[in-house]
Amino acid sequence: MEDGLKESNRWNEMYYKLLQWKESNDGDVLVSVDKDSDEDTKKLSRWVINQRSAYKYFMNGDTKHIKDHRIDALNKIGFVWCVADHVFQANVEELKQYHAENNTFDISLKENKKLSAFVSRVRSAYANKQDGRAQHDLTDEKIAQLDAIGFKWDFKKSRRKRKESTSTAFDFDTQIALLEEFKAEHGHTKVNKLIKEWQKGNGEPSKKEYRRLPVFLTFARKEYISFAEGQPSLIDAEKIKALTDLGLEWKQPAHVPRKNTGGEASRKKKPKIEASSHDQEFAAAAAELDVEAELPPLAVNVHVPALPSPHIPNDDAKFDDGRSTMI
Image (tube, rainbow, N blue to C red):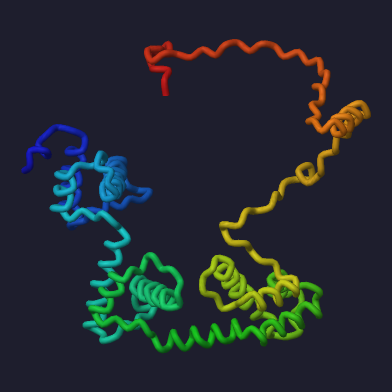
C-alpha cells in the first residue's frame, strides 16, 4: 500500500468504500444509483462523479483537484474515467461476441434491444460523418475499433429504406407542387394543424398524399438549419425562397438573436418629447454661431433623501450565532 493511501482523510475513506463496493458488486466501479439506493451509496456515487470531474481538470493542466498517486490508485482498481467510452467498449465486446455466434451485425430490436440500438446509432453517425456532418461521439479511434472486428457499416436493408424514405420525403419538385396544391385548397401551409384534426376524425384530406407533407416540411426545416449554419444541406437558397414564398415559417439557428416578443407595452413606441420653443431658439442661435448648443438643464425640483452609509463588516464580524458574515 502506498504511503499516501495510509493517511486518515476523507479521500482515502471514500476510496476504500469504493473497493468494498467493487468486491460486493461483481467488480463494478460505476456505482450507479436509483430512487431505492441508500444514502451511503448515493454519497459514494457522487464521490465517483467528482473524481471524474477532477480528472478532466487534471488532463487540462489544472492539477490541484486530484493528485498523481490518487489517479494511479484508481487506475489500479479499473476506475472508469469516461462512462461514454466505457459503454462503447462494452457494446463493442458484446457485438463481437454476437457476430461470432450469428455471423451478422444486423440485430433486430426484438432480439436484443440495447445492442440493436447501438448498431443503429453508430451506423447513423457514420453515415452523417460521411456526408460531412460533425459527429463528435463517433471518433476515428472508435471507427477503427469497429473496423477491427469486421463491422459492416452498410446495412443493405436499412440503406435501401433510408434511400427510399429520403427520395420520397425530399423529392423537392414533387413535394413543393403538392404543398402548393394544399395551400390553394386550404389557404395556408399549416399541414400539421389539419393532420391533427383528421386524426381526430374531423374530416379527411382530399388527397392521401397530404398526410406525407409533414415529413417533407420537417426534413426541409432541418436542412434549412444546416444551410443557415454553413453545413452541407439538401436545400439551397433557391429552394428556401420557393418555400418562403409559399408562407413556410422557418426556425432560426441558435446563434441568431431572437426578436423581442414581449407584451403590448413593450411593442408600443414611447412618445417623443418635443423640445420647448425656447430650447429650439437656443439651438438655432448656436448653429448660426457654429458652436455646440449646450441646453440649460431642466428645472426639476426633486427631493432625494440621503441614503444611510452601508455597513460593511470586517473579516472578523460574526452573526449572533457565531457564523461569519463574509461569503
